[in-house]
Image (spheres, rainbow, N blue to C red):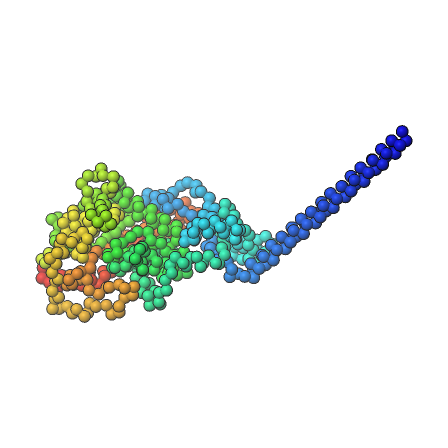
Length: 478
């Protein structure tokens, strides 16, 4: 019995020692883990502080976006301008991801998402040097997630390297002379829009085989000190000329897009007068022949057809309005001056914005194709004979002083030439003052009368070839 008790005591003592040893090992491991965690946390904190200090030293490392301002729904602005009432309704909160996309539309979505995923997007917590979170006069940055809601005045910063991505889209190296030429086309500029007088022969939008276009050139020449490049909101044919409007910000561009779309859809409704009041465009065209009536409204649906080669296409009038591809089109016209030599100056007001609408309506509906329109008026140019120069006019006086850049041919092209240029020019555009409308909608006041909103009257001088044709017909006996 005593042996058994001794054996039991020795066994219990052995188990106790094993348990004690096990507990000592657990405690040691726990202490080591705690120490390691403390070291890691301390190291992470120190690294964050060092990184923050590095950010402050390297101020040029960040690209600062404009302070956040609550966006305005483009359709709301259009409705406010049309109805004269301030739009009502709550807008969806803007996240940091949406704001970066709005300020930097040229950046690929994948890149923007990657910046947020790698935690490379920051918010500046100092506003105009004010005292925030114990800091005064210092830039304090904090990481931002893609879903963080933006508040008025918030400033977002991106790595400065994104500027390299932004400049790849428009890889042009224009000379100062070329930039000066583009800027000489400017008709009007405010905080929301830029209006230019597009020269004939200059494409509005780039594409295959197009080296220079207005959208690419405007992105560099008309950006000035704005963080965003101007954007196209409507188009003009390559060979036509006249008023071309660009939005300076994404918000103003969206509003202008909405107004131009509403111009077309509203013209097909019963409320045409309201639509015309919101936006008006007037063209001047020289046509071959004379309309039977001196003024009228052309209402003819248009459709697109593919030619026999399978590649080329053209627009034509379609009689069956039930055709799925047909689009109704309205054009007002009025005779300005007629000539005994078979030419007529027309003023045109398109109430809708269909492709090649004016050219097709004049050629097919009125039977008076535009001078220089070889696509829709080829039959009228088969026996073209240049008009003689009047003795009172000198040909040298009508030549441009300097050769224009970008391969533009601005000399010649009048009715005195064997191959005249297209005689279609957007001479005037009347549209609401978008800058004033946006300012009113973003202000705290609710008493705004948008019916009294100022209208912008944009007028573009005639191109050289149309001025020469005008002078020639004015000098010849009627």
